[in-house]
Length: 204
Image (cartoon, rainbow, N blue to C red; front, side, top):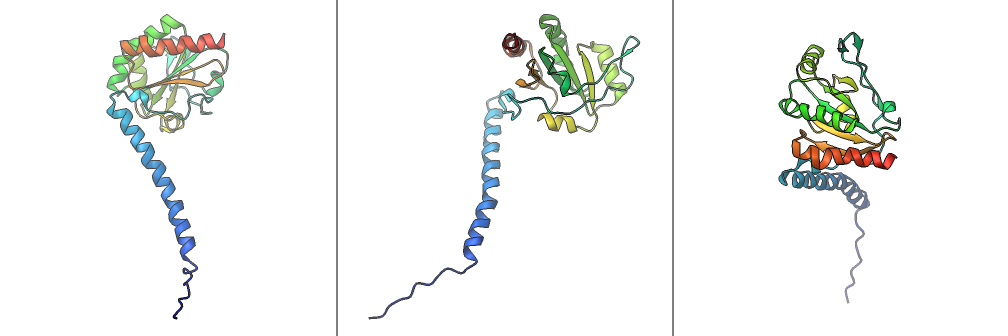
């Protein structure tokens, strides 16, 4: 009777399988995130895009003042994350003078400030100082402070997808709500103001 001796796999096959699995994991994670993003976008509501920052402190990133921006004769300051953990609700709005939807939502930011009293911080994204000053001079300045993100690094830290985007922070400086895209009268009433009020109530 003829017997067959099992042949052991080549000694380098196991490391190859392990290497292939390590390479496959990031691709699987990326594909899952891509499906999630596509689902949110196909639903017609980009504000449903997830944010890894929800429930976490604002990124420790400082936005310098816009050159030459003043309130009368008083220079308007920039800001950093330390400004948010002061016990009051904060709203951070990323905008640009070249952004059409930013023009559309701007009156609603003014209304938000008037109706809630929340401190709104503006981040001017990849803009020229003169253009930013003209924008605020023409449409009004609802911001408590305005910082420049000339290189776009701050937007990356905050996980911004595009202009405009708006964040609500509680009195501890934690991000509790994110809105992607321009604020509309409907989202102002249904989402933004309730998020500000809920953050204020939780803080009290």
